[in-house]
Image 1 (cartoon, helix red, strand yellow):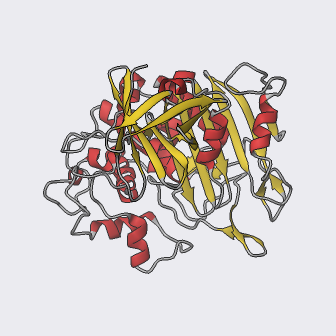
Image 2 (image 1 turned 135 degrees about the horizontal axis):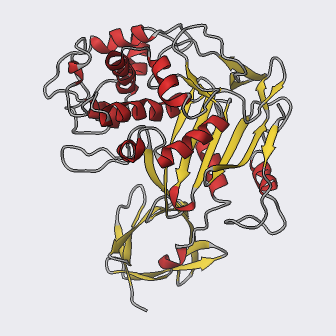
Image 3 (image 1 turned 45 degrees about the vertical axis):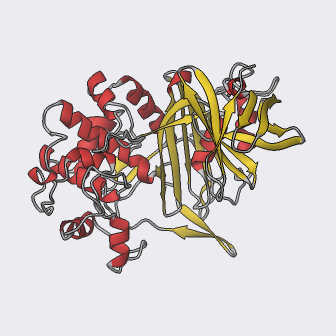
Length: 440
């Protein structure tokens, strides 16, 4: 198999420089790991329903000097969760699982809490269950121990207290997704790995994807995970065989297929797709960013939806930017590698921050009796006072910005209808100083 599959693209999207191909732009982002003795990464970019770009950088296995390709298999850690959650959504739309039923209806070994933990609580991380990795560590396990799914389930079943009442708070819990895999097994009467293979992977042509539920299972063409050590790199071994919260081994190209299927609802139809994108809601009415193993977010003012994964030297991010019909997958095999950051850097090649000029203007603080000005300079927002430039602003959310100066951590703009009316300026010791936007 050739090392790379490429479609070269010239100036048609976002910030691609005139005369520079997409390959050149992406290569520059990964230059630091595109070396013969460094753990690497695989990248896939989807436009519409097609692979727009696919390439590997660096080394998948340092012991045997095997390079990364788009078909290299990685363990993708918590990116696995969206598959587990989609399985629950599929069973729910078929009427085989009730999202509002107590989990004990399906798994009676779980302690009965009051109020009860429902399937929906597991999906949205609102169950209050203590996280399995914390429990394992307190029980004396090390992350390089052989840890079976039964070991984790036994710890979860023995719990008699929760972090909070179910539905009242959000707290990320791997335990909930391990229980979801067990629930799928109980309802389907099949092993989780086999059910996922036949229900999702085979129909979608994801031929290199599987959940590893047996210790020692041989997975062809899999990358090794590494961590930086004083004399180079140290291998990180994954010895656990639990699935649901993690445990998916797949390729960047297979995940590209998944992003397309998730967009269309190829499995289960629009009803299942829409359910899988539905955000959780707390008992107080607050809507969460977290859906079914997917996190809703913003990048440069446009919606994003995806998930990251991190475990034992493996790093992953897969997600979409629906308004641009853009999908990005970044998988790596070095502990210090940041796939989410790299994915956003790739997205920036396609997505202009075209709404920035809406923030330009004059802002006045009644409390301080002072005026600040926001201007656009070379596609970047600058904050000024009458005495000169104060800070450069960087978007962190839909109407949120950070700055590059110590006394101004964040600017949170307030919007009424279609108009921005001002912002709250905050730092660690000075919170929410209001600046009103003046009509000009």
